[in-house]
Length: 263
Image (tube, rainbow, N blue to C red):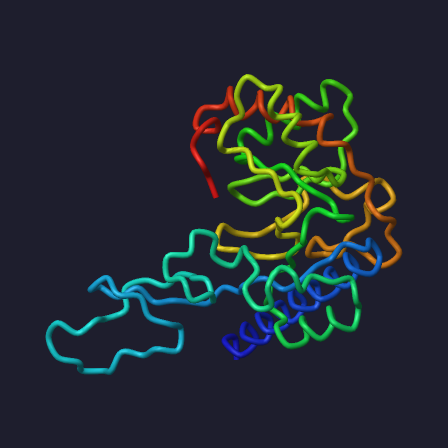
């Protein structure tokens, strides 16, 4: 009986997670006019003692002979064809990035068919852009910006990286801004035109995607899993010039946050 109740609780929790992703995707697209699309999902894998990795549905025959692969550990891999994908579950796959839309019917159709898919924002154009950096450097940068009295917009966090959403910018504008710097750490990433970013409440290979800073004061109310609620205003976004100095400084001065590229 306890096992049945535990299974039911897990199923209810999973249904809530799926509903939260659909609700978030619709709110981003319709309420905020942010173009979104479903990302590559995660799939469970079993790592065998011989080092091979098998899909979640693969089973090892009982009583296999000597040298047969036996399950040793389970994990998660990307659903895309690349077995060495460095950003599992954290990138567009099918459809491609150009399919990103604000059409509610399309968004609902996507997440009805793929309820476990992460929510991917297509950055640039009229949509927000972002600057991301390793999590430790991100925390230092936010502290510096707070100390300077800088108003920030939404900040998206994963266990490994933080991303500060900023107003849309073009490549020419960004190039001029970075050219004026003595150096720019390679761990900084700029998500502009043609780029993308995972939004809460997605889950990727690195873990849960969440809001480190909630989107705008009028959007403080959020769903239990991190997505925006109906009726929330489109978030305010700072200009990239307002934050880039603090991000460069934090990345340069943080051990391991300067030149090492971290996913």
